[in-house]
Length: 418
Image (cartoon, rainbow, N blue to C red; front, side, top):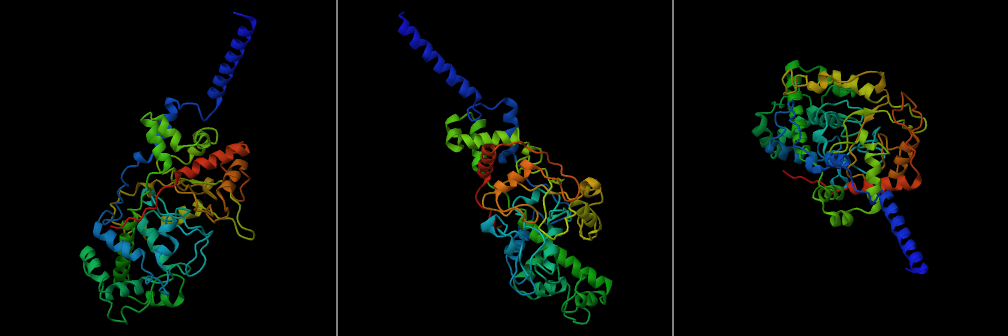
């Protein structure tokens, strides 16, 4: 072999070695390890089980209850001005959210409207977990002055007089209260902060209060039966996992860009997102203080420490008299975590369908997903309580790659109609 041939061979060998080194060290080309594959499979929507049984709601799985709940969900007549329905803030075209920093119905709410897709799997509702069932949550906006703004007496009177709703209700629960006597059953009455309605409510007999409230809770249970049907659909990420599990490398490459794969690797590794955002719904359903800054002039939100207090005294909780649960059924409520570490803590949301769903965080403080990632990368000191998050140490490219991955979690809108 001549000297020139040797030189060419050495150069070729060097190129091959350099290429091999690059491939071995390029995160987008590295194969997933066995442990990483197990982690990825745990996030796959194919592992999402049936929603847990809500023992507090006897009609949770009843198709006829879901049909009634579907109608109620989209009916603006269930509001004080006849213009607000559940779908005003939970819009199907926006993954059952509203695209606003804070919900707006009768007035502006104090917090961001979370999506209700997949909410059947959550043990807690509202950002601070002040409700422990879908039906208990569904009742609160109906009487909140900034949301639907109505009252339970008016709602039951409306259902009783409606030729569509009345037979649907009676088929499920039997007769509605006879509210024909305006002295015994005022036109408007409910416990709460409306002085006139509260006075009328307090003047009612206890048994009449109970019958109206029982019928009112039944409406919430039907709405919950419908909402339980709203589950996320497979996303591009899920199809990628399917391809990985079947060792279809060509399909993997067609589904994920190199940056998206690196972003996924960051998600389950260096960035540590999976510590809180795990399981097929990418949430641990727990509460964490992540050092979010409130808007100027606002008192910091107490978070879960206040929600824990409220759910314990909620007349509609799992252990209450309007619940269908047996005494030993309410394990989440009975063994609920408490303590000062919950000050400022908010519920971990699902990361599915983030694309186009901002503003983000519990008060819509952050407009763009890139800003959310920047916040977690810095992990600033909390205004109240202690920030559990630690700085991530990601560079600008890694932050963009992580965002690219998160946008693969979008899927078709769930518009279940029973």
